Image (cartoon, rainbow, N blue to C red; front, side, top):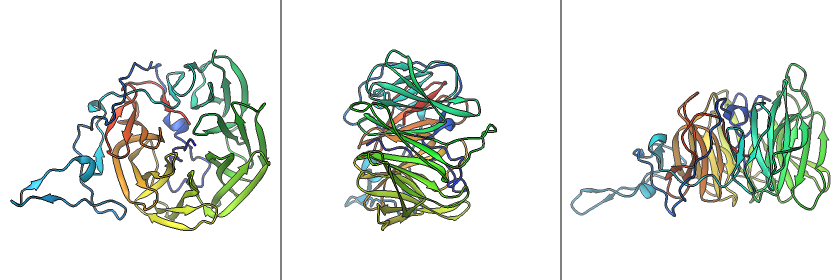
Length: 394
């Protein structure tokens, strides 16, 4: 299962169509192309960040370490991986590791994942990218809207699908789901959405279904042959989780899971509870029953590792250019495993042990995709620190 990095939105915009899934246009950097350099192999235990981790403060979900004291009452310094769970990222001081092992974009070239590098033709702004088998998928701007290009290994566009706004893929990269919503000439959204599901092998073409009278459709996961998405029945109304089974052309609405932000491979979902315009809590719910396992008012659950054991989280209020923190929580207990501070525009798990973050220091500053190890919190640069278009694939 490829778990997505959630919606980088504020609580005010959690039910608004302006919410952008997986970073999208927000993560795109207009500028010169940046070629990915050869990266050193990732060691079994990456070098820790050189900036000093800060100790945990008062957080209901944070693990509070107990300092070790010797018989002489002199404090004994313990490793950051066991006693510190908060780290401030300094991009210039991170060591260099291997390139991302999932799809990513540098300049106009899709790299990583299965297959060769693929260049996205044309000059249209690239909103998001993904891999379907060895082919490339790219959502690009077209007029006031968007379209998705399917590109073969030779760089030839084999299909153009109009109005696509988001892509998600399975963890093995052999399945992709994408969604399109009609727009007016002014760029304003209208009701309804068309969902697609496609396999790289064994099927001809994509299955699709059009769902009228839904708004703010956001894809969350493609798991075990089912596509999970969040949508509302009115433009400004509360959203709820939906499940589409492409093999059966069947959609089920799960009112028991409201405002879903992420769905895991083990039958759980992150749900957002709005308390006010700038305050709220995030709950871990079972799917489909909606039983609450735990709640945090410190973080917003935005994704999961493929095995569902770790919840990926961001600040409870997400708005503006980027987010100041990224965190990982124990999905069973809700306890904080690690928190990184910086400026992050995307966060997607590379595997069960590593999180990829698209990081920079603000608009027009050099950016890098960094890899952080969940058990230790140590980070490294997976791409060179440079200006130019940079995205982690969906």
